[in-house]
Every structure is written in C-alpha cells, then in structure tokens.
Length: 127
Image (cartoon, rainbow, N blue to C red; front, side, top):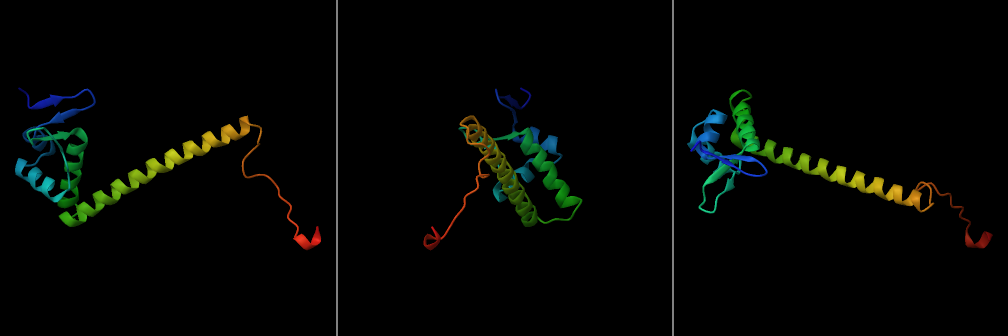
C-alpha cells in the first residue's frame, strides 16, 4: 500500500505521506492540527487524511515560520484572514453574477437599465 487514498474528487494522504511531502515530522502535523493551523479530514476511525491543499498549507506554515520568523499565533491569524478574504471574494463573485442576471432580466422585460429612470418630484403645495 502506498499510503495514499484515492477519492473521486481529490487525492488524500495519510499523515506519514503528508509529512514527507511537506518536509516535516508527523508529530509536527499533529501539533498543527491541534493548534488549528491545518485541519485535515478524518476517517471514521479518526485517522487524519491530508489533501494536496493541506500539504501546500503545511509548506506555507513552514515557510512563514522558518523564512519569515512568524510565530504560530501569527501564522494562525494569517491563515484565518486569508480564508476570510477568499470567502469574501467568492461572495462578491456570487453577488456580481446575481446582479448581471437581474440586469439581463430587467432588459428582457423592457425595463432598460435598472436605476436609470428619472423621477421628477414636486412638493405637494406646488402641484
């Protein structure tokens, strides 16, 4: 057995293979999991299964720690903020697509471009 588990969606690695791919000791991966830096999927028996994305994240944690001198708390904050930015970017894309859909529906309905109507307002006493 190669230590790898194939999935229809992605490839997952047992902890020893993920540690080797990331250039770390398996105990380091367990520590990072405990600290919430990298959260691998779990098997029904509780075994850790690391995705290729997890391995890349492990390498980034190692780079930030060793090359840039960032402590683990700082790395966790960087990861959390990066995840928030990615989620917000995804949400902006969803909203932009929805706006495009609504504009297209408005044009199809003959409403022109939404928000371009001119309204003249006069106070009641001047009507």
